[in-house]
Length: 166
Image (tube, rainbow, N blue to C red; front, side, top):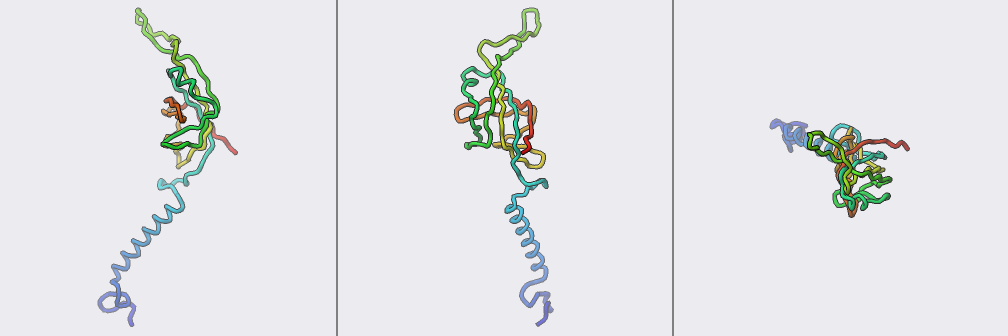
């Protein structure tokens, strides 16, 4: 019995072109399966790995009830699940609002009821290449961030990020 017969079939069973196509398809399926099992990033970067950080978020002009609803030690919440992040410190300041005077000048004035909240949060974020992420939110200085607990939420801007080396 010949390896390739006169009809171009290997062992008289399968065409050589069909065999090459099957090998390519099997290699692609194996590659996708391997990539999925090893949880490698499809961006070519390292796999998602946890990184401990401390970051601060300033939520401005919040009602006092919202401000007082947060407590140190609260675990953050995102996408219907708790995330690996806790509020480690909270500072409250009166909100400064800007008003226009009768002369047309812009002046800052302390609002009688609204508060600015400065959250310090310790978290284990996911690192995917250059992206830091927790609960579906990217962590970058200057980006908007929702601080959510089981009972409260406030939107603010990230002011600082400190990487913790352990």
